Image (cartoon, rainbow, N blue to C red):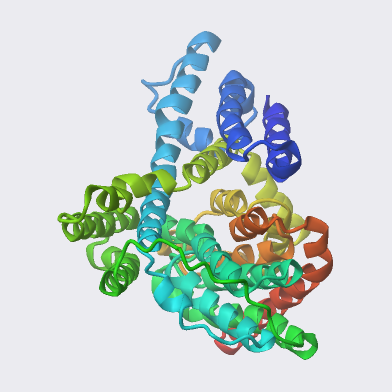
Length: 479
């Protein structure tokens, strides 16, 4: 069953990667493998645990007192199944739920701002038709919006903006693709800018201040290098589409400004909430959502029923991408099963043996994230490597082993560089990130076109940013 779990996971991943040709939403195979991997895990529990592959079971069984030990194969199987159901599933579900509630709250807040036309305050300021100038404006705006919001939502907003700015399909594809690069770069250095950085932040691998200070410069380089290359060859002006004069506007300028300010403030409040109260970030996000929800209720109380209903948060919730939540639930659940059974430990040992360098390991994870989603890769890395503490470091006597282990402390080089690599490496292919998939779906960007026109730019930017991070670490004396 240990091998069957891998086969099921790989087949599910293929279905996710081939979402568009199969015409099956990626949430479907994700939920399927998120359940089936656990099914095969519990069916093969006895063989997996007795082989010593599962470190979680090894630790748990060692902690059992002699009086609690159960003899006999039948009783032992029951005990193993009880461990999976009442210990491992509950433990991992708690961690997964924190991420899902955080995402649900963030996506709802952004959707509220969008439905109140808050983003138009930003988009209406863009008037240039020069391609190079517009590309820099869009990229820089995307970069910082992605850090404050998240790369997926920012990409959706910016691609919607491009539809109002550019009429030519090929030009629109190019700009949308560059938005993906900027959104992923912007999300990599912010604790709330990308699902993977959210996971590392919530998991305690990094802190908000450190990830911003150490990863922002490499992320900027990742965006700027492709822009500089493109600026040399990109010429001419864009053709704007005809403006629709009958577009229905439900909010006045004051309301749009208010919702943009409190929405962004609510998102930026989350890191402050965690730092001050030491509570999980999802609680800060839900608090922000409740405040914004209350403001909308009071704001539209005396409006006509039709307008009030359309701007109500209850109605807006129907627009939130629930399939995305189910996708993350399924894929994180599947990775949790592989972590519990011991697959990720084997992978970690293999990478340590073959690569033996944290920078090479993170770079490999980043390139892999271009082929598959970066969420399970980061979840896998979090499962493969423990956060080293002062106590665990004190127990290491070998100087070389101690030096290596220091990379895995909170805000250690491994975790910071992982945030960069997993966040930006996905740009190399259009299906390698949530932002890329969103842009591909919205504008029907061709996979081969992106591979020819954008992938090499993304790769150069990725390597350049990685080089800057390494140089930065050397200058700070961390290498």
